[in-house]
Length: 291
Image (cartoon, rainbow, N blue to C red):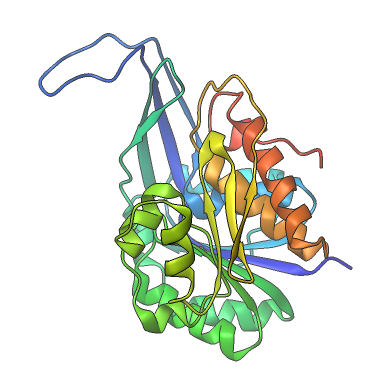
C-alpha cells in the first residue's frame, strides 16, 4: 500500500516564449516559438510524484474558467487526485516564461486564484483524506495558509516538506513546522542571508530545526547529515529548458521517501528525474513516468 502524499500549492498555466537571448530593457526581439503548458510549483511536484506512481492528492485553488477545467483534466491524466481542488470566481493562475538558447529561464507568476486558497478547507481536506504520510508545500500561495496547514500537519504526525520558492525569508515559527527544507542556491541566499559555501550551509543548518537539502542545478545537490555535507553530483546532459527541474526534484524525492528508499537513494532518484527533465521543452511535459 502506497503512503499518501498531499501537495498544497499553486496551479498555473505556463506560457512559454522561446528566444535566442533575453531582451535588454526597452529592447524588442522576435521570438522563435510560443507554447502553453501546465505548471505551478505545487502542480508540478504533484504531477511528478503521480507519474512515478505515488498515491498523491492535490490541494489547490483554480478559477471557474477554461484554464481551471483543463488543469483538473491534466491532473486526472497524470494520476493526481482532484477531489480537494477549490474553485473560485477569479481567473486561474498564469506564468509567462522566457527561455533562451542556453535553456535558462525568466518567469513571472501571476497568482490569480492561487491567492484565494482557503486554509480551513485545506485542513479539512487533510482530515478527509486520512492517513497522509507526507505534505509538500511551496511559497506560491499565501504564507499564512502554509502556516495553518503545516501546523495541522505537524500536530497530526505528517512529515512536512517545504520548497521555499519563490525565495523569501521564513519565520522561525514556520521553520519549526518543517521536516525537510529544500531551497535552490538563490533561495538559500535569500533565506539565510549567506553565500552558498559549505561552511555557510553548515552554519545555517545548525540554526534550523529541520533537514536541509540545497539543489544546485547541474552542480548537483548538497545534503547536511550529522553536521557534514554530502555532495551528490548530477549527470551531464544537454539542457534545453530548465523550467520545472527543481519541482521534478522535489516530487521525485518525496516519492522516494514514500517508497521507503534511504535518503541518499531518494536524492539520487530525484537528481536523475530532474536532470532528464531539462533535456526536453516545457514543464510537466518534460517529466518522465519511468522510475
